[in-house]
Image (tube, rainbow, N blue to C red; front, side, top):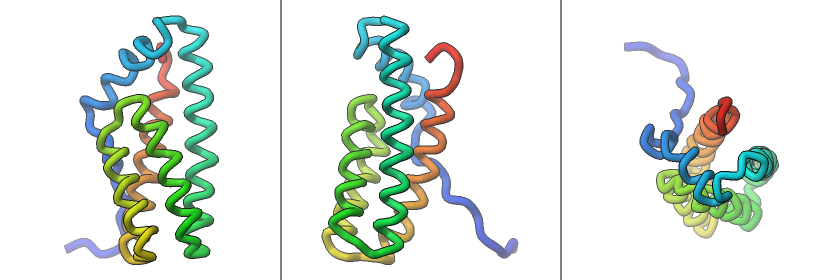
Length: 126
């Protein structure tokens, strides 16, 4: 049996990732310039929120952890990433309870998911 650590996997389902271009087109009326602007804002906001999430977890600052999870949840809801929304809700619950064990498991899953999302959003044609 292998030993060592493994990286957490993204929770984003393939069907959700595949639907992102259509969702962005729907949100923007198909305007490529607006799509590019929305994608840029999503990537920047997720990077900022992810950094805040990490700082909050390290400091066990539960209100800040819940706030960062909530912010990411809003962006995920906008582009219909239901699995990420559910994960953010679990982080909010863990933060509300001060559950450092759950938060320590969930935050890396969310980080992996946001890295995967950035990859999807950065593909040409988005």
